[in-house]
Length: 617
Image (cartoon, rainbow, N blue to C red; front, side, top):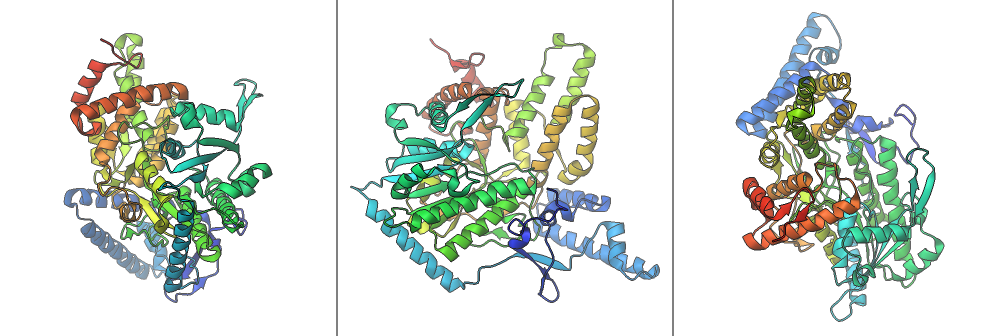
């Protein structure tokens, strides 16, 4: 389905969003296309626009004053419109907007977008949330036994990055008596014929998963049960037999399944993120409505980027408005729509729900372990690392022509589209999951949106510096706007002519992901409820230490994504975890605080990196 094809009403953005006339305030009854809600639809279509953004980026670098830069941008735009009016008058043209658009790439919108609001008043909403929180507290107290909470939780998305950490922490939480993990059977196909040669059942997949998570002892594995299901189906695709038992026992549902592909088309993102959320919400509503149900609450795992590009305002935990600067991709947009559906279930169906919204999730804090994840921030680090390996390749392995070609390609790959001052909100997965587990036990979290983000964001310049120290790679920061519109297309053309389609595609994908997230003026996510409601420590993880461990893990444990066997990654991560724990005990602080040179010295003394085993003797 293309965007020129009319979407079904329930999938249309118009189901959630309305277009409003700027002058009259009246709603414009016209279909809203998904692409109209993205940043890319409203800019980067004119060379003057691209150059203006480059200028503003440089001004930001020199002054560090965002307010000043925005004021200058407004003045430049005003001058452009005034000039267009003068040109239109001289040419006797009636519409100066046509001249403005042609000469300067300036467009004036006669409307704005806003989310459709629930008709309830603020007072009615507050009263309802208080009622739902009291219900959750009563339900929680009813199951308490000798100070323990025998929680029984259904988890979707258990095989994902965050889902695996939930399983790992749940195994060691005495309040969680049982976790039922929804998982699809997996078909194993012949690589050549593509015929199905084996089907791994949910039980088999669960057994393999627990083993890779170091939870395969009888005591720990007894807490988990793996059943067949699919979040994109009614009742989550759970069999009637399983449903009967779950209705009588479940206290919580954690809906963690989602598509995290930033470049997916709208329809795919909507199906995974919105329809999956609706199915999970309806499932929980049926649990809550069942007679004598022990059900306490539904936990929806969203993202703090549901707020889009809020460059002028702080993204608030208690409110979501349509972003003045639109959304970066369909992932953000559809997760925002899913959050709206969640609010509707809270307000219209009185479903007890907690919304937890992580920022950009990376490997856990101590060791950077990520259980084989190679997406998002791991992707550029792996590209830089493999490029560096190419540059360091011994001269005897190829002739000078091949070496020169390899050197040129590697240097092309070591470009990161990032404004030096851009701040990226990275949060370790173990902090995120600590918040999720805490949310199971906090009735005050019901009806609330909680950001699981950080207040010490990482700048692009710091990413460059840490990558240089840890990997020895000289990454060049490129202006995101120029890189997206000029440099990247040129690089792609050259690389494809050199028959390097894989690298060209990887760089294109990185540009699509980070071209927007590494511009100056990133959204500032309000934090506070993670501490005041969930009870997490006031001191949030140090983003610099966390990113440093991410680079070390990607380099040594995964060889920049080239170690792909999940069992081998699990073995390596256990060795790595024990080493980091040992260093933590010796130094009395986080391993990420150890300098790059000192850390390499520790590795040389204690690790055989070729076999990835601890040295003996």
